[in-house]
Image 1 (cartoon, rainbow, N blue to C red):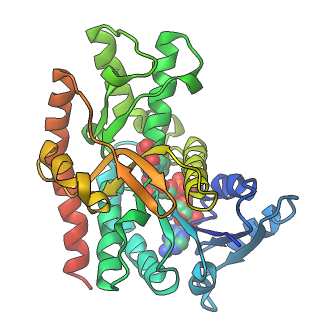
Image 2 (image 1 turned 180 degrees about the horizontal axis):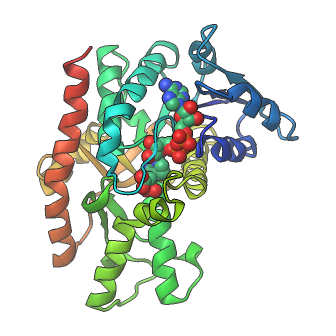
Length: 329
Ligand SMILES: NC(=O)C1=CN([C@@H]2O[C@H](COP(=O)(O)OP(=O)(O)OC[C@H]3O[C@@H](n4cnc5c(N)ncnc54)[C@H](O)[C@@H]3O)[C@@H](O)[C@H]2O)C=CC1
Ligand SMILES: O=C([O-])CC(=O)C(=O)O
């Protein structure tokens, strides 16, 4: 039995993400939780002839508890999205409390689940979840992931537009965090190797860092990326299931994680990024979640500068999340 739970399942990301999870045949039960509409979304998806049994829950009648009990995997896209002119950090005011309360539910009802955090600002919401789990003594750093897959998906797509190749064949590591300057694409490590000009590198880097803004602007007040995020979230969830349920070795996905997850490599990795406790790296998955966190590899002087700009902002974002919990619980 493999139960997956989506918290915020009726939203712009939640609905298409739940659809894609319903199509994942490794999942036998799909629990959808939201403060509105989740029974309707569940009824609709339940007619699709794939194995997962779909259930929908609202907060009444211990809905969160029922949605979470026995979950193997919990994905969190609950919370408000940006409007034009906002930063992801502007969402903290509303989303920090939403994520804290959902994390409390996870600590109580699904303490062993793999947790995939989509809600922004990811740079702060991941530390929020970690601090809540620590307070409940159920923190396992190997099981908590900030979903940054969309940055990598965008990096492939935007780079391949310049190269003129199939985007599925292009891989660009993206490290750091998930907002503006904290998103650091390592274009010098693009695979297959491609010698971009300096101007191309600067333009591509900017486009990858601010790809989310392109969508926010185009949607003109109606929200941010939902469909591409659903695909990216489903890809990440599928990789977690492949590693933890099917036992497939060697799966590498980039993700924003707590560096305590890999103490063996941790001290060296932390030195390279000014001692930060959280960072997005290429993460190798194993049967228990994070198996190994891969380092930065060789970075160019331009990328080193990008990292130097990312570190102070990430530090602030992390501290904001940590102190939100420690001054409130
Ligand atoms: N990590 C990433 O790469 C990305 C993250 N995001 C973030 O994902 C979040 C969701 O975005 P959208 O789906 O577009 O927003 P949305 O507003 O369409 O959906 C959010 C859903 O969360 C639900 N919700 C609110 N409070 C809740 C609670 N306490 N418990 C359960 N559900 C609750 C709402 O009812 C709604 O259905 C935003 O914070 C957005 O910034 C968006 C795109 C990419
Ligand atoms: O831009 C936003 O606010 C949503 C997001 O995180 C993204 O699309 O990368």
